[in-house]
Length: 359
Image (cartoon, rainbow, N blue to C red; front, side, top):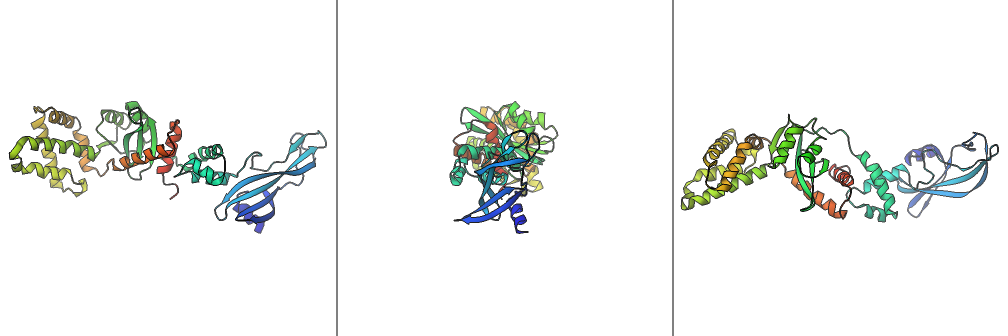
């Protein structure tokens, strides 16, 4: 009963436990194969033991006892019929492996939130070994069931002024689902293709490429413009209009009244206040569509093209606030890894960091 419990604990049920000892703070399990006389792999006849001095050491990990060592005696055997000489192997264990699967998965989880180099130093293992374990087991930590209701789309810089990428994030949980290189319409479309089946709201900025990609990949989803960019657009226009009025600007209290509405959260606005904002928007567009000021005229033309998106921004509770914070996390990951040459590995790292796997 005790041996069976230990075998299940260390996740190696197909071996025999010969001895258990503890050296300093680490447990050592001496194991042996279940078969007393392994058969020849060629002719399946009985074999003769030649030597058993060689041993294979492996790292192991269990949740209740932590890191431990596994000692496996490796016997050299010879077939009396065909003369085949071979080394004994253990079921589920590679002859050249230095760790069990449970230990490799635990080491891969330790790399989430820190660098691979730091984990390799902690475990006193080669960097390339820990790196191979991480990129082998890390994809299994992520869920393939991606069905978000609302997503945020934004661009970020791999190298500012040179290389850019597009990220798609869940607007409710903050988990990044996809990262693609580039910031044009094709790159945005490739990123949205991962969530186009279930998404109902897509939040983005005022970039024309965003609108075209969203209409192409998610035609049934409602496009919501980020409220920060909308507020910035309106407040700049209001400030310019107020400054152009000069001393008479104090008499135009309606401008300040609407400006106060635009700086508030959409949830705090009443139905009457929302209608006031919508009426002011329509009146402002018709008034300044042919304004002599080129900046105000450009804003009015932009509002004509984005009327539905801006109204959705006022009525919708979603914004790109989480996405902007995630962009800062992405920059920190990039700096921590001293840059990434492989965008697939960088996207995997970002997904793991934002998926809250360890929580």
